[in-house]
Image (tube, one colour):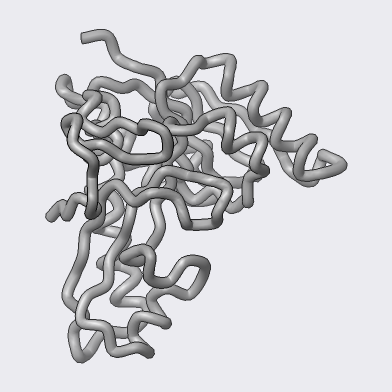
Length: 213
């Protein structure tokens, strides 16, 4: 099977990027990272990409007069690679509606909570403060609503009595590194599809996110 192009957007360390770099080595992962783009020149993820011989680009948002102008420059760079998927992997920018619309059904994000719980920041702290039994991570389609797009898949961990924000963060990050490439593979294999704002798994509407261990 021909491998589809993936573009990954980062702003920092790139640990989820590294998970994709490892995943694409598998013969049954039908995607290849065509480019890694960062809005920060000092993002360590750029070095990860270079070490894996993946093309990189730096598009610093501070060099642009507005969010819209930056997003247009980003869009132009991404479209050079005709990607089947655009993966947000720690990309710390809120994208404009115009940008999001260009990649409807192809734009994924991962969030460190069991959405719809805890959109936004400080998810581990909020989960602990609310004495939740479980915490985890979610992969979702990106829409104009922040952390509000349809959730495709989740992984969860039981919260332990001795857990702190730091211990929970580490465990959830470990879940992320497994969940994100697995979910992307479902899209690359056409097991997950987007139709008119709804998510389908093997041609049946997905009523609840897939729970992936």
